[in-house]
Image (cartoon, rainbow, N blue to C red):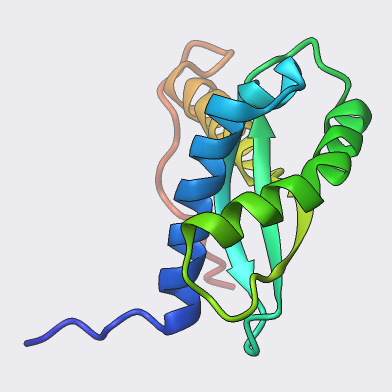
Length: 136
């Protein structure tokens, strides 16, 4: 069975993600922008606008300053994309902090703590795994 082809928007989003990552790594003037990871890019159906999701590897960086630096760099980044990707119209770039990784981390920590609680009950008796049923 053949896998369905990704849409043009998804392919272009992947290409924009890869190019932005290279541009930020190699030619960003702001050192804080070099510590940014582009997680994914979502394009509108008409390919005119791109939402670029990112995370920062620098824990000490102020998220507002990072966002402001990306907004300031957006015209430069768009110009660099125009030189690297052959498109009639390079989409406008809007940057958004990607909170999904932090949410995933919190969920994993909660699941770990739940597992620890069920593995070692406080009263020393084995955990009751039988479901409660009302026979009345």
